[in-house]
Image 1 (cartoon, rainbow, N blue to C red):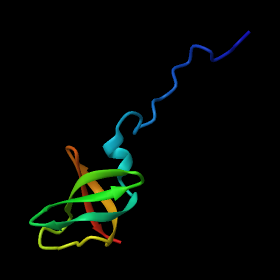
Image 2 (cartoon, one colour):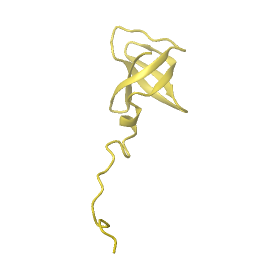
Image 3 (cartoon, rainbow, N blue to C red):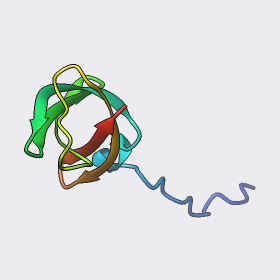
Image 4 (cartoon, rainbow, N blue to C red):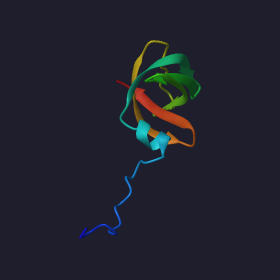
Amino acid sequence: VFPGMRRVSPEHPTLNKRMTQLVGQRGEVTRDLVDGNGQVKIGDTVWGAEPVDASATLVVGDKIIVDSTRSNTAVVRKA
């Protein structure tokens, strides 16, 4: 009666992986990224962040794009 009802659906690759979902998102620096540490606001959440290029300095107000994540830290570059 219901063909395919028991067929297993593949899980979405970023389901319940919040940090992975950040990749590609845009945001704004809320605390200067100096010496590899700072904060960014993406959507309505503030995240710890570090720049892709360790020598880069991003300051409050700079627009960013999340390039990748490491643990609970967003790795960002200037937009």
